Image (cartoon, rainbow, N blue to C red; front, top):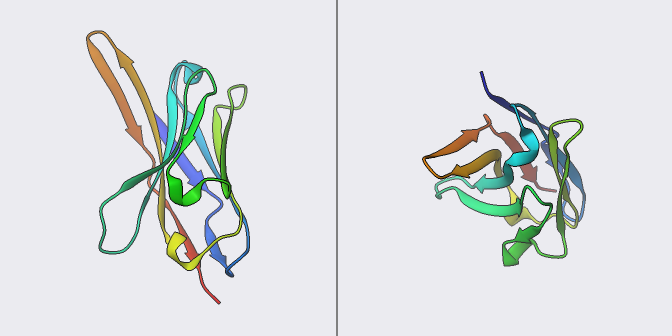
Length: 119
């Protein structure tokens, strides 16, 4: 059974930092693209950062130069280092594992972790 478990969320002051982790119990973790999404109150879920199976990364413009996504395939874990946090970063952050194959796609989600940026 595939499980993605996020941790590291919490309350932080503006300008502060948090490091989110997502531990995945998934076979062939290295074959998956790992993504972080956020969902702010009253809004739709949106993609924040991507790291491909090969290690390439991409970010939404609003977090570029502030957030860093990384992965440790030996630990089946993906991270999101969040610096210079702003109140508008407040959201539930979700980990996603995605793998596309010719005849099927594999798409798994964690339960989310709350990040609140407030003074």
